Image 1 (cartoon, rainbow over the protein chains, first blue to last red):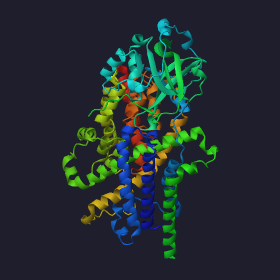
Image 2: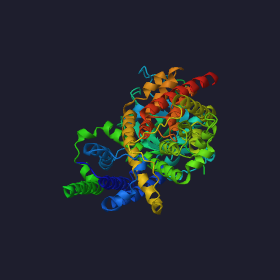
Image 3: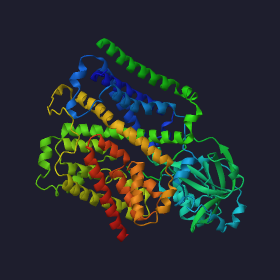
Length: 300
Length: 332
């Protein structure tokens, strides 16, 4: 049975509508951000519109008997799949993403992905030394003895201003007694702290993230981390802040926490690195947008 | 017999449509009935990354398709003939690189554009120069590289510089090896008739766009899936061990760029997470090679170009980029 050109047009139209429905559903359920970074959503609206338009036209062409052949233009080198089995396979290939897209559990990348990618802490990629030996962290010297004086508390994030300009943000972070790492400026804030670590030792810092533990970590160590997504989840990388606390480290990996603690400095493989100590924390639900944005200033 | 065939074909379409509607409305309910064995966390991660690559690439493929449709309508063969200096195939590389730099499209979108340019009569080696420069020499990519490597201007300008030089060499070598032959897949019934049912130019564009989407889509889907597999199962810490080797590291990073198939707008941020471990030259190898050719793009190219050309192209790009980064290494 050889499918007619009209059938191809018809089925393609329906597949296009299928993609439109998938994108629409992802928009409606706010799950799109689990796949594509919010700043790319404009393009997704464009794709949605194009899918609906193309799909509708193809279906109309595929069902109205006369017009199909007229407009089909095979001088362009578009090849229709030949034969029944071949076309079924090709269309199955197109249907597959739609079906799994609808059936996929609301999934967030978890720490198993983080483990494969390494976690970026400050300016260094945090990964187990190839030898597997937990080194570095055991030889740290605690610097901020005075830090115990500060009693960390959990405060609402909206007390801390959002500042798009990196230099102004730097000023604010420098001035404030307590640094709130807001999701809007997660990486910026952390890199400010990392850059001039000595100035911040002993200060209080509060942030939200999921628990990540590496095989090379000591008992009481973990990283409070976030995935950052530039365009799509494929380019996700993990940023975080090392924490040391026996209470915190009892938490399961991938638990989301809101945590406040005091910044201290450790030496990790020869580099100074911030570490969170003396924390208070609460276990929370994953935030509406689990991913944070890259340190990326738009040029307009 | 014919009516039976029509009936069964229509039914197929309707059943498919119903399937989509049911999934749209009740997908969350159906989800609960999927046995857990299918949903191991690594499988779910593969599918998440797969869908994310796919969803992210689709708008850009569509943009590329429409851009190519615009070229089809507004750039005539004779205009191209006049612009391109036919007698100086090597000199023409420079304006081609400028055209590439001016086109604000990234790697997925550029493949249909390059193919259209060849169809319009642009020599293949020039279209390829446009294809490899456009995804790197472009303001958005420059900006993202700039912000990812703020404290390392060598990477930012090195990326742009190497991309330009490598693109010119790639174009020259391709001309040398492949000459003026047509690298596009020739289909059997290639009757070059011009059909001016001009009453319906818009309609034609739309139909083309859909056909082109399906032409490239199948390669994109396979490419995205394989890349997602690599993304999930490849342990990046393996790379860290090799990062310090000066000769091997650029090659490894190029291989890595090839298989993970990132968008050129985003790869700088991934590269920056390797910053402290890898040498500048291997970071540059990653940033230049990935946008020029990667797994996803190889498959996209195979949709239009013949296999031999794609192989030669990959070989030339690999050797040129690798050599360039090794030379840069001597100076950094």
